[in-house]
Amino acid sequence: MPQPRVFSGIQPTADSFHLGNYLGALRQWVTLQDTHDTIYCVVDLHAITLPQQPADLRRRTRVAAAQLFAAGIDPDRSIVFVQSHVPEHTELTWVLSCLTGFGEASRMTQFKDKAAKGGADAASVGLFTYPILMAADILLYDADQVPVGEDQRQHLELTRDLAQRFNHRFGPTFVVPGPYILPEVAKITDLQDPSIKMSKSASSPQGIIDVLEEPKSVERKIMRAVTDTEGEVRADEQAKPGVTNLLRIYSALAGEPIAALEQRYAGSGYGAFKKDLAEVVVGGFAPMRERTEKLLANESELDQLLAVGAAKARKLAVPTMDRVRDRVGFLPAR
Ligand code: TRP
Image (cartoon, rainbow, N blue to C red; front, side):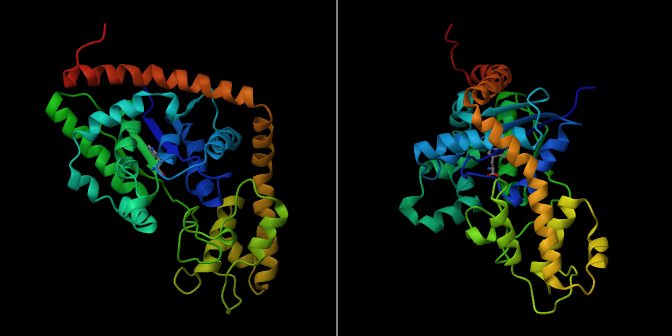
């Protein structure tokens, strides 16, 4: 029995993944290797939908890949590659763009949010067609499932619609992927503003903890994380969102249920709890930090891993694109 295939992507837009990325996505990506045929992509084409300095993009692409390997994604069990290494992604995007209604694309809420932030002229056409590129990523590999957070649900719906539309018009070509909203996604919020998700674009540096961050800085941020005046370590999403977030982080990293933590810290105040949490976070990320640094110290070896990943990815993407070209009516090049 072949295992169901999973495809997911992450943008190389930061010098480190953060705690939210790790608990919300990466950790599940690692686990999925046991039960699924897994393909993970560093989506540099998506990254340039917002302006990037070339040197930053280059560095961050390697850092992203290194962190995937360091987190436990095994290049022998998963395909790990860089999106721009497989030109079929952009080629399929064009074909799918011609099947996407302008109004349909205009309804994507993430585009509206991002465009509103930068002002009308700051938003590029690339940012507008971003979800179509994402659809191409997924459909090229006949992915059955796509582990993404809630914020990507609408893009996944578009992917399904485009696959069905293409199949209906040109005959069965694409696997229609099922939604795969990550199970028990630890919803990690900003340390300074627990009403928003921990995110590179929305959070202040004080609100985010990076996987590759210096231990001293991690401690400082956790000690200063927003709590409340009650002084009780207990989870209550409504009344105590800050403490609840810290409990979630602790529980997820230490593998202990929240109830057990509430019991342990009953009556002990926030200081002791935060101090222990800082230790859990620093200790939890230390091996990944070390492995990432080691991988980054040998760039040519890392690039070689990515070259192998790209070759494996192309082996799957090229036949899909050939099928698409034929269905659409493009003449073979011979
Ligand atoms: N848009 C996704 C995000 O920002 C990243 C992404 C690009 C992706 N292509 C994908 C995720 C394909 C899943 C499948 O989180």
